[in-house]
Length: 308
Ligand code: DP6
View (tube, rainbow, N blue to C red):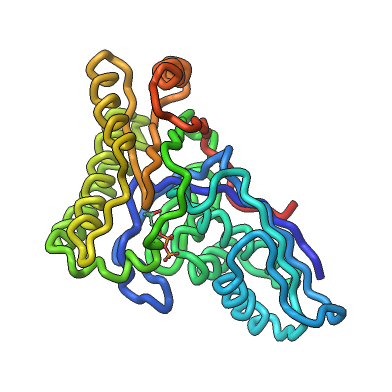
């Protein structure tokens, strides 16, 4: 009863911020994301009657054991578990380690327990661990709507890049789970929910036409909209630092100089730069000369979580 799974992190183009049902992690709005090739979690899960207690290595155990308990119950298994997990990127810095983490944990646990679940069912299980994790299960470009997530397009559909610019590796003070819960206190939240259906329509059209400018404009609009909500919640959440803002400004300048690049930011200071594969080298050259950057992590669109 042992299995290992590998899952990618994902970057949301339309963000998930706010839960209609907190216990079931049902989001207020659908979200759309891309799986990231260079940011993965690998997790091994083993159940055995030889173990005298549950043990978790490499990550804070509380939510992991809660998730294991849900799945143990489903399978009717009572044995103790040993979980070992590693990320190949800095955790808790706004690169969604909970997404890759709970996606890998769900797939490895289902494998170790011998549960025969469809991909759709696995997305619902992963969602209960962490909302954004359900988007790391299907391949490529993914939409999460309500209970389930599914692939809109495979990873080779569009040669996009997400260049993550790491400008702060310190763990965040407020977790995104806590942040989600105050979303209704922002006076801008209602406007956000009203604006999202049109953004989703625009993103889906941009995908169909492979219109990068149209895609990028909606991605930035939704990022800034989510951060407006975050910054006006009670208590407010400010995730950016000075470097985040410097890069946001630089992106505008590069775009004016004819380099098609757009940014998005999650619950942390690091900034994700989106471009097409043909423009990756030019963008990397711009970043090379930029003072204050700690690390640059280029990602291609990736497949979803897998047993390995
Ligand atoms: C800002 O999925 O980490 O990255 O469901 O409470 O685990 P929980 O939240 P989580 O929230 C991610 C929020 C975000 C936006 C996004 O990825 O869509």
